[in-house]
Amino acid sequence: DVKVTQSSRYLVKRTGEKVFLECVQDMDHENMFWYRQDPGLGLRLIYFSYDVKMKEKGDIPEGYSVSREKKERFSLILESASTNQTSMYLCASSSGLAYSYEQYFGPGTRLTVT
Amino acid sequence: AQSVTQLGSHVSVSEGALVLLRCNYSSSVPPYLFWYVQYPNQGLQLLLKYTTGATLVKGINGFEAEFKKSETSFHLTKPSAHMSDAAEYFCAVSAPGNYGGSQGNLIFGKGTKLSVKP
Image 1 (tube, one colour):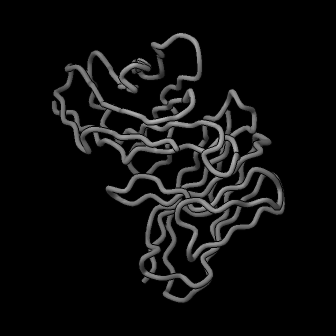
Image 2 (spheres, helix red, strand yellow):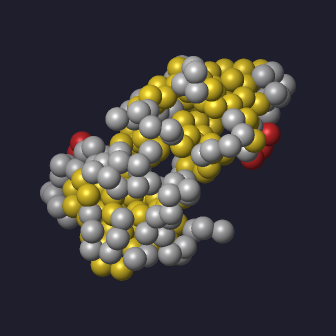
Image 3 (cartoon, helix red, strand yellow):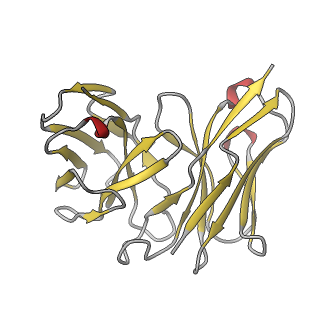
């Protein structure tokens, strides 16, 4: 079974703090993704990566950065957390093969910024 | 560009009744289509997917969906709802080139919350 793990299920941070969200997958997938999920807005793509050290902006990259130094690990960084970044953050991975675009999701991190 | 519309943000059915969750998509190329389910405080889990071939796709937990190209639809159905089906359901579409030619990106609908009454 594909497993995607996220470092924390719940996180509470203060405004202005630097926040790291970690994601690890164990299936040697090329592609990794970070989404945020808010009620009524569905999933919105923040950043994605299709190879080590490669990254691409998604729909809402402002206020976020990412790092992918190893194939299995994809980190999301909030440089200076703000209250409007309170949300559920979901990490996903997928194979780079064209017939298998399905994404496998981690359990999510519910981040609260106070 | 691709897009997905899910009709109805909330759907309520009685236990044992038919479940029908609607999804329409827009795509300029042959799409890959997915339905995911999310139980409270969990990540998304794949229910079923359509890539090519048979247009009626069967998934887990008794769900199925039919790809109708002429209607640009991929509605999710289950003949008899169970209390454990209460969750949020997301339809998604994928096609090469969603973002600068990168493969594997999904465009999600906004989700439909399914409630099941006893």
